[in-house]
Length: 111
Image 1 (tube, rainbow, N blue to C red):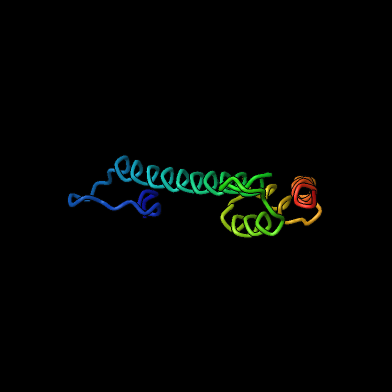
Image 2 (image 1 turned 90 degrees about the vertical axis):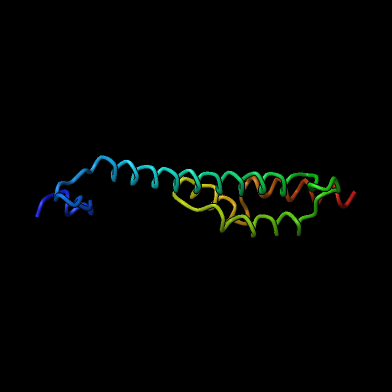
């Protein structure tokens, strides 16, 4: 069995392999999937940044409950090893970024 057959390339009717076309399609599909994952992660990160700010997207003062709901909704969308550090930081209840936003939101709503 040839190496091309073990890679999953299909022979043409004459029995010869033309791996270049199939390889190009394979690389294109993989790069398209990687780009889709990146786009989803960026969209989730943008939603997170908008949701944990001092002001909500509608212009009202953000609350702790709303910010925590946004974090809980966005965390599952941040997939892959490139988001591992961000997921760990946001999952910890005492992380610096989370503590700052919670402190800022709580101090503004009490005033």
